[in-house]
View 1 (cartoon, rainbow, N blue to C red):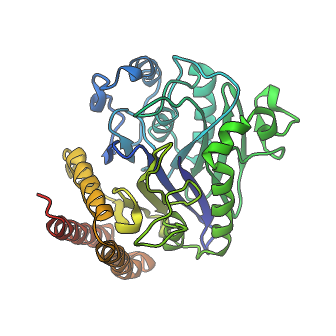
View 2 (cartoon, rainbow, N blue to C red):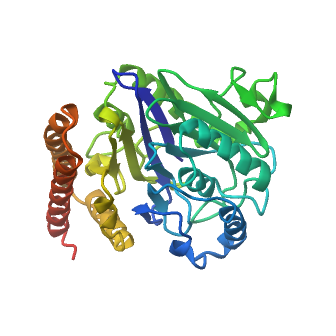
Length: 398
């Protein structure tokens, strides 16, 4: 289960944020990438074969002019969230309907990544996703372990606009959103939307298409109400959005493990854990993504990634899977360790973020050169790597 949200900063520019909640054993890689299909030459899971065939057909019809920073479950091509070099950021949520999904339809995460590589604006992304739904449909099994079939809700921003697009099988509704909005694993669009498919016109989209039993078990309405309330009071900054993402009803030493919290730790009967997180901001037309590529951001820092010069794209992400495995092991070690380890990790994560902010904000505010900002971002990421190594040593990991 996941949560995605937007809030406008003091200048009226949308901020974007998402937690990706997945099975604890699933690895998620943070990658800067083109639209190449090379990352998944042959699906690792048999269940993805049908979706991959549809993806290849859809992929061949598009030009893919934009690169993107994505957070990707490693068994699929698509992404849970990401931002492209045109400033378009997208997150998706599983939503549950009584409408059937197609066995050969696209996974919502593949739809999301196709939109990132082919959209010049948030409005353009909305149009493209609608066309993908019409032409290819949505479907398949999006769960790494077990089975989970669902439709999708999308939250889409760029540096000037924000939209929510929700679907139920072939049906859809979309609207422009203003000051703030959040989506979770329940429909958020009622009867007030800008446009829809023909059958959904003049109706309450949620009431018409939602599967109420599945919405109850997902606790999506509860979490959407929680994020909406938190967004009202939080600071309109990336750190304010981070505070919403790391909200948990328990304590640092003993996290609440129910699906009523925003940062989740796994619990039966449906084990799901916050696997990765992202906040995107656009200070003075810079595209800056603050990413936590580790499970449970309570214990890990959000690290800055910059869309700047082409040089930044030459850095290799070949070890993305190994890095993901290491961060997963660190989180597991912390969860099994004493309270003081958890508290120390949480404290050092927030201190590091404050240091990053203090280093970067003056450069952003005075519109420093891209090279200077990139140098500061690179220093931040090196410091995060040092902290990660120190945690690994504390936990006795190689």
